[in-house]
Image (cartoon, rainbow, N blue to C red; front, side):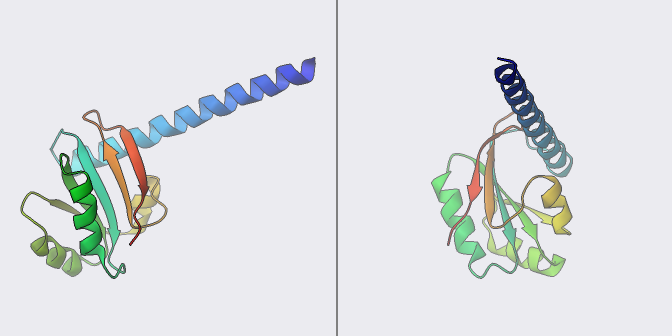
Length: 132
């Protein structure tokens, strides 16, 4: 009998911890994007590393899939490559240069290319890995 109570208690603790970590991550993403970009709309965030060979086609394909959302590209790589990429993107795209991958790791992005959709409050609604 007491084993069932302990198991139920552990499950409740794990569910609470998962919710806390998800809320903490959403807050970090919201603060990062609020400081970097002043737009408060639903956003499609595409995280790209400069070593990805066909990153422009991935950006285009993903933004076409979510055409109703304003795209924001988080670009991890050298500044000259980010400037070159921003010139190749359409005018309504916003590009944020991420200096090192530690910033993305802090946001919970551990592999690239990656995307996530934010609602107007800055909460992650959908996320996933992009495949070529």
